[in-house]
Image 1 (cartoon, rainbow, N blue to C red):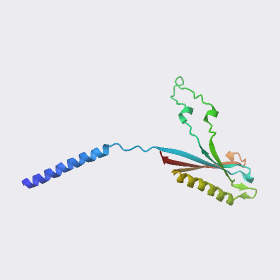
Image 2 (cartoon, helix red, strand yellow):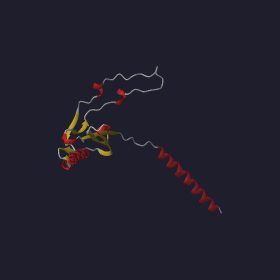
Image 3 (cartoon, helix red, strand yellow):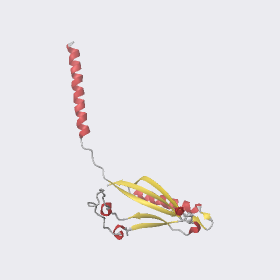
Image 4 (cartoon, rainbow, N blue to C red):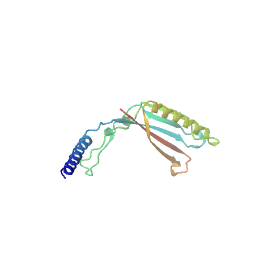
Length: 164
């Protein structure tokens, strides 16, 4: 009986010790991994007859959104209007890569789509080689603006991240 009691006591001490050690390791601070993000936007014209412009855009400078943000509280007396000017928001240092339009005089041009895919893939591969990871792809289309004007754009935003 004494051996059984000692055995149970040893198991209890072991479990208590294990739970204490486990709590210590879970409370240890985890290293903070800092990342940066970069967005590359492709704007492809869907204007008939090849009259539009298609580009891949990538900013080379950063902006702090806080400089252009107003916080609203619902109390008009406490709200402050953001006084930033449009030219302060604009980015002047960026890459602009030409892309081909989806349409030409003959209609949709599949060769242009393949060429754009090749250029975009080249950019993605280059960024991956620089340590960026593609994490999101968002697309949108604005076709004719509901006005029947035959104009529109197809936008794709590629969001990349990498560790600092």
